[in-house]
Length: 319
Image (cartoon, rainbow, N blue to C red):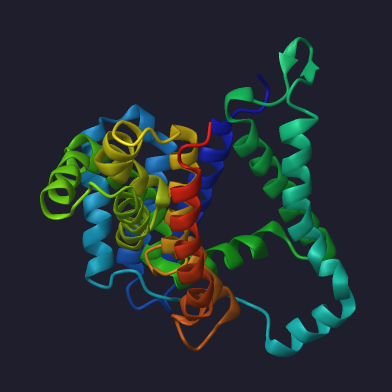
C-alpha cells in the first residue's frame, strides 16, 4: 500500500510538536514552558507511541492531566489577522470560502468508494483496512492546500491558526483520546458485570419495557459521563444489552446495538465531555456562553431518546 494511516499519525504528531515549539518561543504566553511540555508530550504519543512501553505512554498521559489540571495550558500570541483584514478577505472570497470545507467530505467519499481498489505499480493506493480514515487524511491535506491557495496564505499561517485553535480548546483536545481508552479500561475492569448486578438487584427486569428503558437511558448517561458513545457501549452492552435484552428477551443483537448507539448519541448532545462536538464549535464561533451548543441541542436530544426507547421496544424482536 502506498498511503498508510500511520503517515497521518506522524503528520499529526509533527503538527503537535510544532505547536510545542511555537508555544515555547511565545514570550506572551504566561506559562509557555508548561504549555510546550503538554503539547510536546502529546506529540510524542503520536510520533513514537508504538515504539515505547505502554506503561510509559500511561505515565505521559498522567503528566499531561496534571499539567492541564493545574492550569498549565494557556493562551499566547498567534499573529492572526486584524478584524478589518478578515472582513476584507471574506468579502473578496465570498462563497469560495466553503470550498476547503466541502473538499473534505467529497474527497473522503471518493477515496472510500471509488479509489479503494485502485493500484499503482501493483500496490494499492490507499490502505484498505482504514480506508475511510486514510481518505479523510488525504482530504484534509487537500483542504489545507486549497485554503492556502484561496486566501493567499502560507502553510506557516495555517500552523499559527492550528496552534491558536488547539490552545483555545486546550486540554479538551485530548478528551476523545482518553475517553476511548477509558471505555476499554471499564470493560476490562468488569464494570459491565457490576452494572448488570446492580440493575438486576435493584430494578425489576421482569418487564421488557423497563429493561429497554434502563439500557437506552444507561447508554445516554454513561455517554454523558464518559463523553464517548463507543466507550459507553461495552459497559451497557455487557451489563444489560447482551445478558438481558438479547439472552433473556431474544432481542436482535443488530437492532440492540444500532439503537443503543443512537441513544448514546443523545447523551453526546448533552455533555461538555464530548469536546469535539460541544466545546470546539463554541471556540470556533467565539460564543459568549460555553454551554450554548448543549442548550441548543437539548430540545432534540431528550425527545429523540424517548423515541429510541419505544423504537427499540417495538423492533428488538425483528430479524
